[in-house]
Image (tube, rainbow, N blue to C red):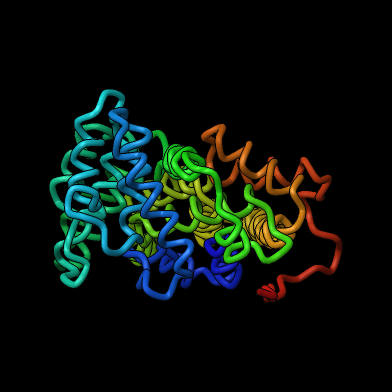
Length: 339
């Protein structure tokens, strides 16, 4: 839910869209309610007994925001077990991007994990956007351009959000949800599904994600470079059909900037307005989910299907008859969360 609330101000700011990646490391866990920290500790302990990639990946993701775990239950060892487990793939390697020293910018994302992803998922533009970010930090303009070209030649843009949310939802349901945790996350009239979704989504949102800012900076130079313009248009298409709301809006924003006609610019601007409306309505539904069991249950069901962030959002809106287009005259407004 916080991911959606944080995204709202970005939806109509093209320059800000490129900066929209969430933090690479979770915030200080000491500020979380003690009941939640104890529950996550118990979840990690139970999940660590499993030997499949799904449960071990969930354990590793939850361990990142859980303090005072014994070394064997910490992020690194659990992640190593997940990577070695049957069924491990690119989604697990994406989690491994976070296995780095966050105090040292050059160390993240983890180089070994990024290189592995380039072999595992060479047709995923998100992988090359990460490489572009690394090249930009190093000031290597040739490598930036090469990474953009590789991204443009890809067939999808995926941060594996759906797979990782599904795994973490499964992990969060490994034990009965304590009442104290429900109250901490969803209020005194809250429900366990809402709390479970908050735990899963709240942990997944702090996994690495491309910033997109270097790609947008490159594409600002596309007016007088036909090859660069072609690559930027391909990237815009991939982003617009990507797996996250921020990626979709970024793709539409890039299309809008590169549009050759006023008609095309207006069309993409209208689509971005639709995304802003959908995002705000989704965020409001998720706020209501805390004390509306039917909404929370549907959100968990959609997340458990392993779909994209976009498909979860649209599925929930359709399930509760929320129009996908805003009424005439609507403009985005800051969403007030009453905790």
